[in-house]
Amino acid sequence: MRTGNLLLIAGWLAVAACGDDRVAGKAVLDGNKVLVQRYFNEVWNQGKTDLLDSLLEKDYINHTPSDTTVGKGREGLRRIIRAIRRGIPDIHYEIQDMIVTGDRVAVRLVVTGTQTDSLFVLPPTGRQVRVNQINIEEIVNGKISEHWRVTDELEMMKQLGFVK
Image 1 (spheres, rainbow, N blue to C red):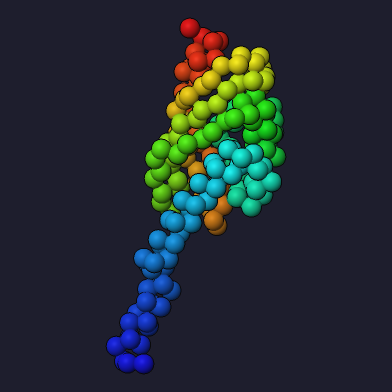
Image 2: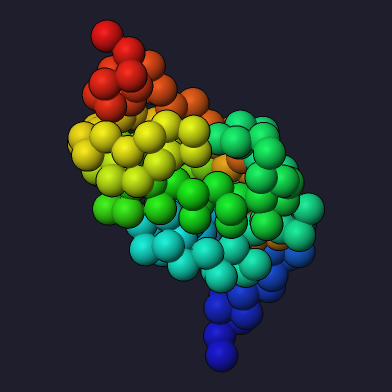
């Protein structure tokens, strides 16, 4: 191996040891992006709540739960997902935009579906919804550790016929 190649490899190793490796940084960003895509596509869209154990930190905090009576952490989220998917079984989260950093992912989504069963305290309507949602997911050690959400709930309530 030529001396120039050895120096280049040594330089990359030194940069990586300092935590400034752009390749490793890209790998973290790509990993965070894939994590959040899996969270919405597999957990929310497909209902694979068993994946929460591998996608969420053990001490996961949901700062904006849909129902505060379901409990906290992974189990509380599991109950929320099941309740929402029961009320809107064809629910679909379509990612419109994603901003990814080393420790946070912000996602703008369009949520669609038809409410065919009770949705928490709301009786079934048979109506379709299409609402905007913004989520911020904090990532620690390759897992979602905290969650914040804003949903256009007024628009959803109008579409379901509960508000004029």
